[in-house]
Length: 238
Image (cartoon, rainbow, N blue to C red):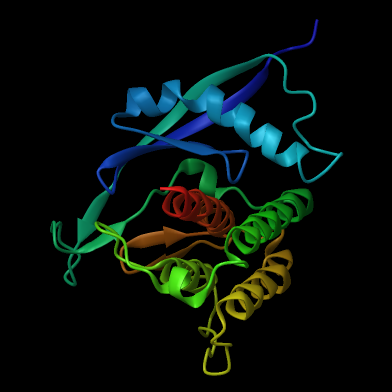
């Protein structure tokens, strides 16, 4: 008898006032809830949507055998904020989730899959926005901090920032392109060249009160790009 696929979930509470459920072995598979219970309950639906998204891009999805599965909550992280003296402060820097799972080194296969997810997320971003006029790209929305152009630049810059946490010397960005699609391509290229070199590495770096590892970089980059794909889609269709 075939065993049910085990889906290990980490919950990150207080992520911009919400709970965020991460399917830890599947970068880019996540969901939100008003509480950790609500986020956890939504994981099966998010996992099926994630599988369907993968199926739209590849005939060799690593979730082809997703039939029966068990959801297991393995860790809960309480998001918090630290000031420059590393003291808890509501006005400080957000310290985002670090799970025990993030200590594990990445395999070559995991990096290949993660980079595929990141590339497909960038393709989604392009398809969502390529036909928009400058006016639409720069339009402001009530309650939003950025225009669509600003969100896309934020995605590209965040992906570079994640990698910088693992670099001995941060990337010199003086020559990075200004065009939003070129900037996204630049950040994707940086990940494609940087992440394979981290296969098998057990390096964990501390930065301003926060732990970073190759697995956390990949986890957050895939989530961040896909999360803002959904964000931009909501703005366009609202």
